[in-house]
Length: 428
Image 1: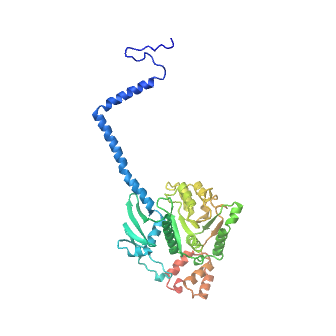
Image 2: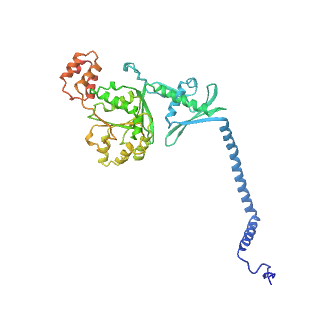
């Protein structure tokens, strides 16, 4: 019969089950087992304690999270640390503020010696710089109460951090303060050459020093060399649209070559100073440098920079000797100089004492646009150096220049003789 009930066993359960009825039976068995375990007071107590602990941990974090959110709503905070060049600029800004000058809890460090226009007036005793010491400080900025917390952490490296805060202030106030710090740093360096080097980890550029700017006229070069360099660089910066219109990468490369002491490095420094460029110096034999970091550094040079790579022939010598400390490959160097990702609007100056040791692929047109040989001093250079040290020499300097065997001494050798001599007669 269609209405017949299924057969049951002795315990009243169905003697057979259709497909799909196994899950309820398993659930019943699980709940029975769980009920049996919970009836054990020890197990139940452990579970209860665990739940209480979880709840307590969550609740303990709630006040801190709420306070953190409240602080973000009513307090604007800026953080900077000593791994960034802005940190030193901010400390210098503090030194020039009324608060920084009157702080009664301060740090004292030695500053580089002041450089006067006249070397005779240069003070060899380092100046002292004062700034608020590590800790918590209150000060007033634009009529608003602000504070800074300065702290030092020492682990693999010493890192100094400053947290700058203001109550009921807008983010724009803090941004304007930082922009003022940058302008202040720029004004301090207005007449100085900013010198950047690779940091100790080989990861980014670091402002290492500032030096008085010097012009190309301060380097006594052979006739026409200074003017050629000056005009070529000015033309390069003036033709940015022309490069873009023709689809040519906007980069310029110079090779200065010649024996030691002929002024190659001095020319690069003077060129950067006269054109108000930042000078970034790099050594390819630095063991911290590899293909990746080299490409990254050349992509992230500061705007309007001159990149100086000195003694490029030393890199080729180390490569030929298979020096294990040198991790930059030749292909890595070429890609960094003019690869697809190479930065535009930059000037690269390579110097070498031995042009013949350079690979032709490095100095081909497109990588090196201008080659300038700086040899030993010519007669005109000798006369220029004599007049630099003895402006009243006049005809005597011209006579010595005429009698001088051309290119027998380097400019550095001549300069050393003139420095050591008390007068022109002794120099002769």
